[in-house]
Image 1 (cartoon, rainbow, N blue to C red):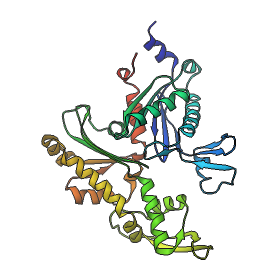
Image 2 (image 1 turned 180 degrees about the vertical axis):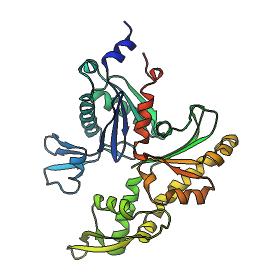
Image 3 (image 1 turned 120 degrees about the horizontal axis):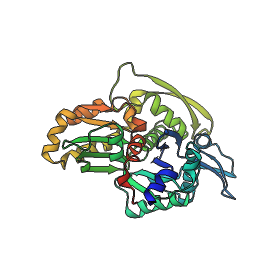
Image 4 (image 1 turned 45 degrees about the vertical axis):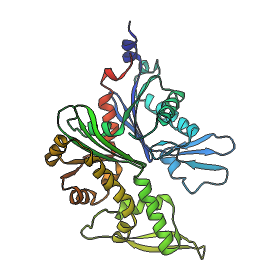
Length: 341
């Protein structure tokens, strides 16, 4: 009886979009079973895990002295090895609960999407962390390829397909043809940097300090990359850095658009850099096929219009941009060729 047969019969197959902001988990034959923030709350003295995911995120900036809410991923890679291992262990355990009992007899086979630009040391850290967290065989796939597969681009055909996956910590840009990446650019710019730009703007202009979750709320509510009709304003609360008192101010969509202009420009430049080195025949395909946006950052209002204006190419937003990468891992889990035996 072959190892491959035993694994197919008695192992769960799990795909991870191990993101800086969120972790999504796909289980073969079950679909997407988890979508949780990449946050872990621990006791400082014992390192005991108190909460993982959404419950831990609600504690950010609000923990007492003996607790810490930690985001163990930064710029798409592991920043805190031990906490990442705890987080992965929790997510693997939750995923395993969704499969039949006989699929739990062997360690699960795990496919993890990672940024294109990470180093070999960073790749090894991801694999080791997953194995210590309970995974059996671990295979890594580039996020841009997983995203392209997840949104249904015909990556195996001899035509150019461009994907721009904007996550919490990185933006992955790639032109894909014949199941390979023809040109690519990975920059450590994403949703987190947009949040930080908003925080810094309010500090500079209003002497006001706000929490990360408030910055994220502002970005989602009125953030934009291009002027939109009926632009909104929003009331936000924070701490007056001079008077040291709570206060509320009103900010506009136009003001926030200006605040995040730097990170947005970096994303545009990454797209341009990828196009600059794209083979001419594939670049010609993009005149018709255009650019597909995926990831949480794809939901930034007006980003598609700005990219069209800057590149002259049609730009589309995926139907499920947040699920693009994890759905791609789900498709790839079906391919027995990715496993060693």
